[in-house]
Length: 353
Ligand code: ADP
Ligand code: MG
Image (cartoon, rainbow, N blue to C red; front, side):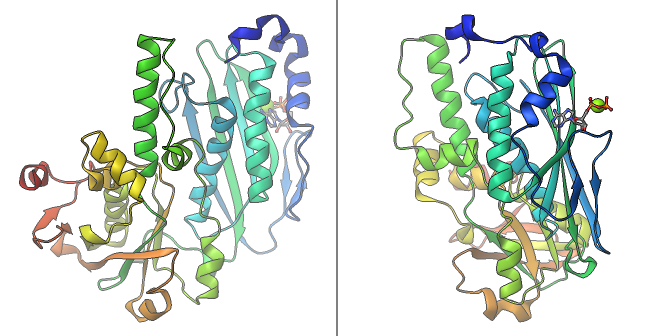
C-alpha cells in the first residue's frame, strides 16, 4: 500500500529514534486520573488508590499473527490495542493505560508507522485509554508489535477463571464465528489477488464479518451492564481462541465440567451463510475459529432471571461436576460430543455429515 508513492516516503533514519517516538506520540494526551506521567520520562507513573493493578501483554508478529498483504496498518494498530483491552475486560476490570513497543525493519517508512499509530490513537480515544510509554527498536525482518494494557480495579470486583461451580450458567456475549469467517474471505480474496493482481476482490456483502476480523471491539461495556443487573460472574474469560478452547480453560481453572448446547450458540446469519458457502460447518467456526473477543462467563443459577432475556447475553450451557467432563449436546439428537481444544472430536464430523 506504500509502494505507489515511494518518492514521498520518509525513511525512519531521517527522524532518528527519538524524533520518531516524539513524532508518533505527540498527538496523544492523558485523560485518566490514574495516569500521572506518560511518554517522555524514563518510566511512566500511575497511581491506583488501593485498587489492584490488572496488567496484560500481547505480541503480534508479522507473518504469524497478521499478514500485511490484506491487513491495513491502521486496523493492525487498532486491533493490537483491542485484543489487550479485551483481556482486561475479561477480568471485569476497566483498562486505563497502554504501552506500545515496536520492532520495525527499514522497509517501513515513517508513514507506515503513522498509520499504525493512527489506529492506536483511534482505539485509545474510543476506549478512553492513555498511551503512557513503550519502546522502539529495529528488526531485521518484518514488524513486531507488542502492547501492554493496564487497569485498576477494586479487588472484590475482579473476576478470575477459577470461580465456576457446578450448576452455574454458562453465558456468552454477542455472536461467534464472524471473525473467523471474515478471515476466510480475506484469505480467499488475497489468494485470488496473488494469482491475478488485475482481479478485483469480491468483498461486497461481507462487511459484518470483515469488520469482526479487521476491527474487532473489546467488550469493556459488559462490566457496567453486569453491574446494573447486579450480577457478578463466578468466572470469566475472553474468546480469543474459540469457544471450545475457552470453555476448557474455565473447566481446568475452576475444576468443573460443562454442558454446551449446540442449538444455543449465538451466530450471525452472515457468518452462517458464509460458512455454508465455503463448505465449513458454522458451529465449528464458533467452537474453534477464535478472535471474536466476546466474553464467556459463568453466573450463579440464582441470577437466571436477571439475565434471561437480555439482548447482550445468551445462556449457552451450564457447569457440571468435573468428573462429568466437557461435552456439547448436539442439536436435535441430544447426543453428547466431547469438546476438545480444536473445537470438537472428529467424531462429530462423521456423525453430522
Ligand atoms: P529508554 O532508552 O530510557 O528506554 P526510550 O527512548 O526508549 O527510553 O523512550 C523514551 C520515552 O518514550 C519513554 O517514555 C518511553 O516509554 C516512550 N516510548 C518509546 N517508544 C515508544 C513507542 N513506540 N510508543 C510510545 N511510547 C514510546
Ligand atoms: Mg526504551
